[in-house]
Length: 72
Image (cartoon, rainbow, N blue to C red; front, side):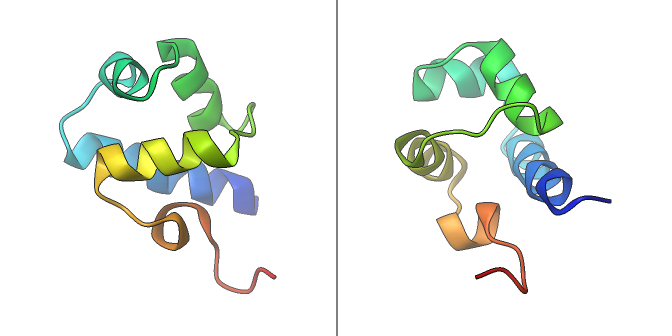
């Protein structure tokens, strides 16, 4: 599995734990459901500001949601 897919699975799992649909999360952070779906599918690289908004909405940290062990 590619690393970006693991990151996106972490986001998807965190969203599911909060009981949010892609549309709910998109509305909360100011993007479309399609954008959230593309991030989760690994087809879109979100800006830092969008990552921060997603983390705040999901109650996660940037490191916890978007950082993989062994990076950087």
